[in-house]
Each structure stands twice: as structure tokens, then as C-alpha cells.
Length: 501
Image (cartoon, rainbow, N blue to C red):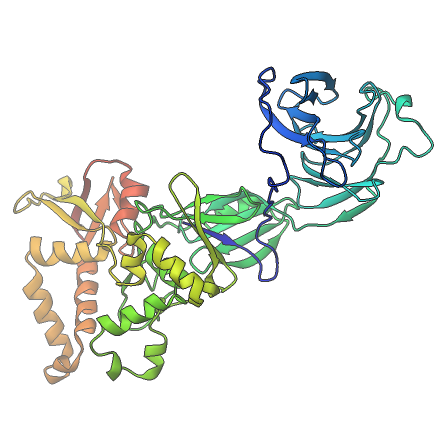
């Protein structure tokens, strides 16, 4: 599954369709040429009625070959490029050819005498595609850069044979016209919160993206990329739950079944919940999938069938039930479902999931591991982490028993401190009596359980501290962050505790 980040009114990709119906199906096989073939340009007259007689091919070794299909052999080999030929174009009469490739050079070749050739111009990036204008006076050229340029192919006052491509400059120093494209992303860094990504485009501009909301957060301009990465560093560890590629020049996020649900986080810590009240744990991959498919009607019916109290809930809550309760993503974001090998099964925009055709295709295409989360609302279980608790050797304390414990990898250090204080040191009853005495009889009974828990935890933090690798741990850290940044081992995490004097 792939998600591409695009601007609302910009094309997110360019698709080329090759017409093959006009080419005769019975073509003799040519066995002499075994180089990697990059481009074939057949000889078709203006009315496209004449059978193929000649064919022009370009290869990865930089050569261009003219083939006679009737004789089934190569009749001419043209060497003008230093590396691979990626694009070929001919005029209607098949008397003139134009070539471009990895070396960025555009050549004009006379097919009646292949020794006559000229360098039309030199692009700023490898040439991918060329189209000759109907009057055959100029050439539109597309490259790996996002801009499209128009080059004049007229030799003006000079003849092609007057040009030595190895010694003289090209006929054109610059193109006649340029259709400016958007800058493409060429470099990225996933920040360690596994939510934000810094990117750098071809204009050296730095942008900050939010993967979870599939949107750009900020344009930072032409600043130091590495400095921004360091500036946004946080001492928090979140498992990888997506991969990134920049093949299209856009930021594309790939989600695969094994890793998509690896990242459980605190909703408050990630700015998804309010500062007051409970702090539920949320799965980043699950939230994104629910947001991407929130317009799919299948997610609505699941809520109505699974929630027996749906009719009793306020109308605002029922309307907001699809998706996730925290955020939505822009409707113009494209979503691609593909096979493991990369073959695309379905491509649609987020906002189109509610259309009749897309709805049916989604039912046929969406894999079970996705429907389980977005339709059935079944989130995967928390990840567990094993660890051991031991007293600091210098403290002189002896553990009641040595045991291997296991807990959610999101468990905060303060909860482990509370466990040590109440269960191992046996101070739970003292903490409870102290809390009750401070509360003052009936006043203490009126306090909610969350406030009592906070007081117990606060007392424990004043009495006990936790260490890993002789480093005192911040109570706000979770176990997986301790393991990644401090323990740095695949073995079971070992934590030491000691009383604060």
C-alpha cells in the first residue's frame, strides 16, 4: 500500500500510454542485436498504412542501430552518445532522427547518410522522452527534471555536415521555451518520532511533513538540512512502521503488513488528545489507515452493526464515527494498493472512496489486515518487552525473588518505580495511609481514582529512583526508549533500583 503526498491542484504523477494496435503483429525476430534495448522507433508513414520496413533502436552501450526488417539485419550503426540511449524520435518520412539519453545530449541524425549529424543541445538532466512538433521545426524534451523544454531543430544558416560534435558547441545554447515544473524531492530524513519527515528538493528548499496527517507542516526555506534534523531530535523511540521512496519526486509512504502496526504511542505525547483526562494508547499505522479510508461506506456499516448503542449516541458522534476520532487527511491524497512485487491493483484518491465504482473495487482489493482495522475496528495487541528488576549493588538491599517480568513497551518508568516502591519494598500500605491522612477523612473519599494514582506515583518517585547502565532514568521515559537509547542490547532489559535518601 502506498500513499503519495501531493498539493491539492497539482498532478501527482505522469502516466504514459503506449499505443500498440497500429503496429503489425507479425514482425520477424531479429537475433543479431542482443544489447539491452532502450528505445525502438519504427518507420510509419504519415497515413500509417504502409507496412514496417525499417526500425531504429537505441541501446545501453550508447549505440543507435538502423535495421532493415525486410532483410532482417542491421544496415547501419551510429555512435554519437557516450552512454545509454533512452529516447528516439523520427520525422514522418523517416529521413531524420533525434536521439537523447543518459549523457543529456540531444542529437540530430540524417538517416540517408548516417555520417551527417549535429548536436542540437544539451539538457540539464538525462533525457527520457522526445516529441517532434507537427511542422518538424522543434522538439519537446522531457527529462528526469520536472521541467519540459522546447529545442529548435533547424540548422539555421549552417549545414549539419559542418558540425563536428566532438569539437564544436551545440547548435542551441539554450532551449527556445521552458515549461517550468515543480521541484522534486531528492533527499529525506525520517525523524525519530516516526511521524515527521524532513525533505530537501531540487531547489534546496527544506520542508517538514506530517506522515500521520499526510500533509506538509512547514516550508523552512533554504536552511541547513542536517542542522534541522538535529534541531528536531527528541529522546523518544518509536518502531519503524512505514518506508519511504522518492521515485516519483514526491514523498511516497509504503505500508506493509508486518510493520504497519508496530508503533503504539501515547495520544497525549503525540498531541492527539487533550492535556486533561485519560491518556489512551494509539497505533499510528491504524490511525492512518482509518483516516485514508474514512470515506469508504464499508466503515460506516461496520460501526452501525458492531455498536449496539449507536442509536443512543448523539448525532454528532454518529456522524464522526468513521475514520478515527483525532484527525482526517486531505481528500486529494492518492492511495495505491499493490502486490508485494509492486504491481498496482487499485489507485484512487482519498475522497473518491465513497463513489460506487471505487467502493466495489475496494471490496475486492483491500487486504484482510487492513479491513480488520478500518472495518472491524480490531486493533493489534500491544508489544511486550521482557525486563528484570534488581537492586543497586551498593544499596545493600536484597531482592525478594529474582524473576523475569514482562510489560507493554510503552510502560513509563514512573509505573515501574511505583511497582518497586509498593510491591518490592513493601511500602504500598504506608503510601496509602499517608495519602489518606493528607486528604483528611471525607475529603479524601471525594477524590477520583486518577488523582489518588497520581499522588501514589508522586510519593514513589520521591522515595525510589530507577537506573539503567548506571544512568538515572527520567520517569517520563518508556521502556522501549530506555532499551533503544540506554540499554542498547537485544538481551532482556535490566533495570536497577535504589532508595532515595
